[in-house]
Image (tube, rainbow, N blue to C red; front, side, top):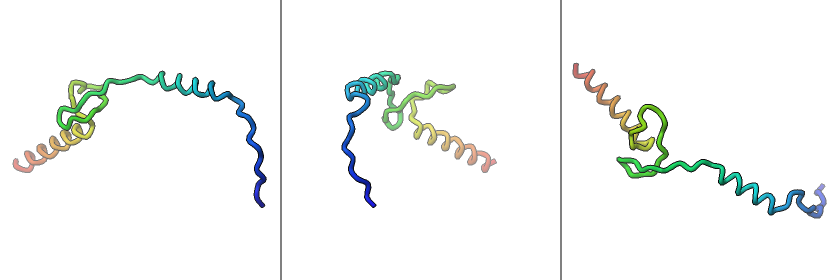
Length: 79
């Protein structure tokens, strides 16, 4: 059996009030200044922590850490 179409009832909350609520939530979000990665040039959000001075995006930071691990393994293999 199909459900009968019921006429749409008027909205409980006026559209103008909903729009005001949406706009007020959007403006409450803090805006962070985007920086650009020193290696690839993409915009990134600076990380908090001990290495705040690094101007690297997360991809370049991970590549740097991987490169350090690779050089450490090569040095230990040569000894």
